[in-house]
Every structure is written in C-alpha cells, then in structure tokens.
Length: 388
View 1: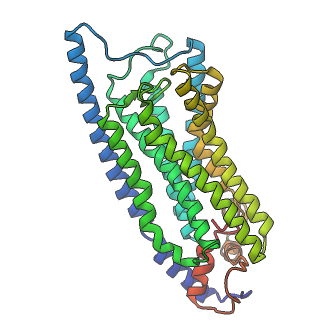
View 2 (view 1 turned 135 degrees about the horizontal axis):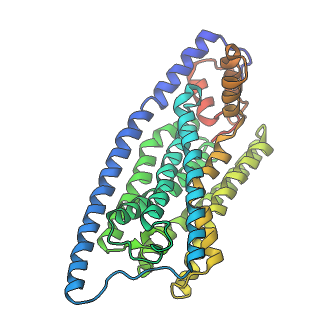
View 3 (view 1 turned 90 degrees about the vertical axis):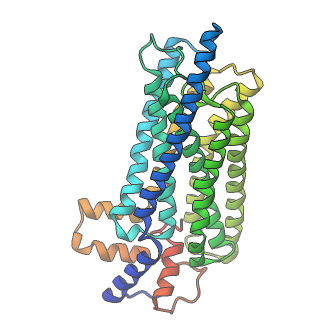
C-alpha cells in the first residue's frame, strides 16, 4: 500500500468516492423518514378510531375494554419512568452525535459509517417513542395505573416503538452481514451494491410486522409504556422477539466466521479489530437480553411483572442509541476529527484524517495500484481504524 499521497489526486479520489457512495444520504433520510411517519400516523389514526368505536360499544353495555397493565406500586412506577426517560434522552443524544458526525465531516462518509448512521437514525426515533409514551402515561402519581389506551398518542408511540425498535436490531444484523461479506466472502467494495437490499429489509420488514400487529388490535397498554398489549403474547413473540433472537444468533455466528477469516488471513491489527468486534456484539446482546428475559418471565408467569427485571428492561431498552454511539462512534478517526476541530491545528486536520484512512489491510492486493478504485476499496472496508 502506498505511503505517500498527492494532495490533489487524493482529494479528487475522496470526492469521487463520496459522490459514489454517500451523496444521497441526506435525501434518503428525509424521504425515508417522511414515508415512515406517514405510515405510522395512518396506522395510529386507524387504531385510535377502532378504539373509540370499541369504547362507545362498551359504554352502551356498561363494560370496560381498557384494563391497566401495571403490577407495581406508585414509587416503583415512578422509578421505572425515571430510568426510561433518562435512558431515552441519553440515547437520543448519542444517536444524534453519530448522525451529526456523518453529515458534518465528509471524510466520515464511507459506506460502513453510512450503515451506522442509519442504525443511529432508527435508534433516535426508537428512543423518542419512550419519552412520548411516558409523557402520555403521565408522571403525576394520581395518573399512574389509569387507562391511557384511549389517547391517540398511545397508538402513535406504540406504532413508532414497534417499527423503529425492529428496524434498529435489523440494522445491527445488516452491519454484521456487511462485515461478513467483506472479510469472509472477500467482496471488498462490492458490498456497496447491497445497499438497496439493506434498506428494503430494514425499513420494509418492520412495516410488514407493524401492519400485522395493527390488524390484530395488538397495540395499546404494554404495562409501563404503549407497545403490544400484554394479552397479545403471540404477536409480541412472532412480530418482535423471535426476529430479535434470530438476529442475535446471526450476529454471534457472523463474529465466529469473521474471526476465523481474519486469523486465516493473518490480518494486520487483528487483535485490535477482534476486540472491537467483541465490543459491538457484546453491547448489542447485553442491551437486548434484559427485555428478552423480562418478556419471557411475563410469558411463563401469566403476565405478572417482576420489578428487578422490569427495572433493567426499562433502564437498558431505551439506551441502545447511547451504547451504539460509544462502541461505534468513539473510534480514532472520529476522535481525531473533534480533537482537531476544537483543539488542534486545523491546517493539519485534512492530512491527519487522510493518513488515518490509509489503514493497512492485508485482505487487499499488494496495494501498488494508485487509482481511485483502489482507494475506494480501502475506504469501503475501513472507517478510520474501524473496518465497520
């Protein structure tokens, strides 16, 4: 791999690479989120209308259709809502940090970091739903335990939670799949051609399952926030937790295969990269396992909540965004960006970042080719010191 770079040629290559891979990122975000919110709004309106019709019918029959779903006292509920809001706010901040960094620093606009940006976008809106749901329930102790399914925002936040939570862990699976294709299948820059399929899976599949849970009247009071109601366990597991389990197993299996491929290739910085991989997979499994365990206990124990598990569930589920920001965002390249932006010599920033992008990767050829295609392969596989 070359060690000297002509400034003009390098800048031209960088611009061409960004134009090829990432110039439509902003448009994709605007159009994609607009369509998604239109779908969720439409579903929420349908759910709210259906609920009003059921409420009217129940009133005529002197019945109630909304049973409160909490098993905890007032103090416990306030504690749960407090950790939900704290985790959600931190997660939104972490997700915004990744999204801002992607659009603020052109050198970060590589294909791998673009996938992380879309993951953070899903995390941002997923975390916001927890705040909407808690605000809908209310923090006033007199409101706790009351029925809030008749509120339009309950259906809206339930739809957002189902959709963006689902999209978030699918993007985690896509990132693992992308790493697998680069290192095990050795596709290099050819993974860029999969982007349209990544979007189809990560935005389309959650919409399909959201339509299912809406059609089965499953959205409503989930206990501590609005999501899939506790008496719809089939929808909870088939439309959320079973796919989550599949992605968790796939991520672990991908890590094992990537580890074998890197060892076989005797890749430079092997130990550092695999350490990062363990961190990525470990953070994902740790954050998600508490909700899985809590919902499983509820399933086998007749929907009776266990406060310690619900507390851990409420603490970590909204925090996926801040966890991703810590493990994905704080790599050497991104830290160099902010250091030189705030404290360093801006005149040297471009050269430092350029040198950091030229990470030695033994999966490529001998590295003597100086054309833009060679640079494109390097930057597609690497984002600073992080190949993902």
